[in-house]
Length: 365
Image (cartoon, rainbow, N blue to C red; front, top):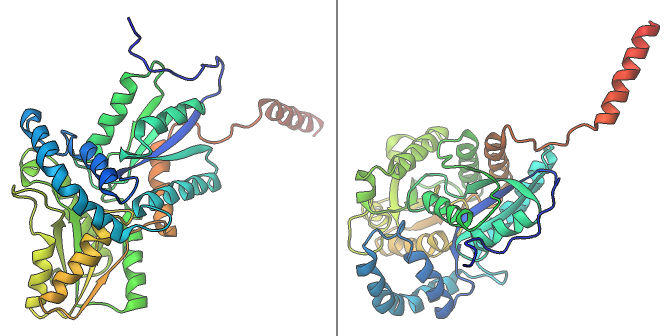
């Protein structure tokens, strides 16, 4: 009978323990083409954490109706934000991982940092394979989701669990579930917004748009809605905003079910109809710019606001690889790496020799 474990790299006995960090984001298609987008959406929308409909009902609908209709439309949206370097989400996640490794190194930590996508490439399993092959015996999994949700954070935990089920020698694992109220994260958001206001002026109203989820998840115990609200409340306090100076909304509704409200686009239209001439929009739940921020907000949101009578629309970019965010990310990593020996241990022979010299000097004195 075949072994349930996948092929693993040769194991070297006596190998020194090493620590790694895996930064995980949602994912992106490999290219802005209907075929690539279809592959990506098939993986994404097949996740039972994302769509909580019985598989026997959902999968035929997904593959027979939704993917054939949606792939080309979504590909056109991706094409509108694609860069010469590729997908913005992949670019920003890769840069965050590289800068985070540099930050940790500057603070004395020997930690290998890699990044992975829950859907698409590089996959979580392939990156865990690579880290294990490089000698990692401890791995901290850090999702790019500040607010916990079963649809996102828990799905990453599922993917790691699926990898461990096929792995003989499993590294020690830790997970960061949330950092929605982390002081460094809130401060990085505030500085991002304040920088935009210094450079572009300040609008009459700040709209904070978070990714939406079905409302039923809230009633089933998912903390996402509450954590988004707390992030917004803390950020508003840090920016000294009065209650009427900002709104909290939810975007990216899919299907006919009721999702968390209020919805972003109708709110933008209502603000314009109320006479708000300039609106500034930030997306605190996204740590890197992607389709949902660059196309859905910066393009479609702008069009909705201006078409409803608004005069000026400003999209404030995500944290991306700003120095403040990398520092906050480093602080979050340090907190969750605590207790693991990530710093070089002093050479025992040198330490012993130093002690002997100290004792000799003391005896002479």
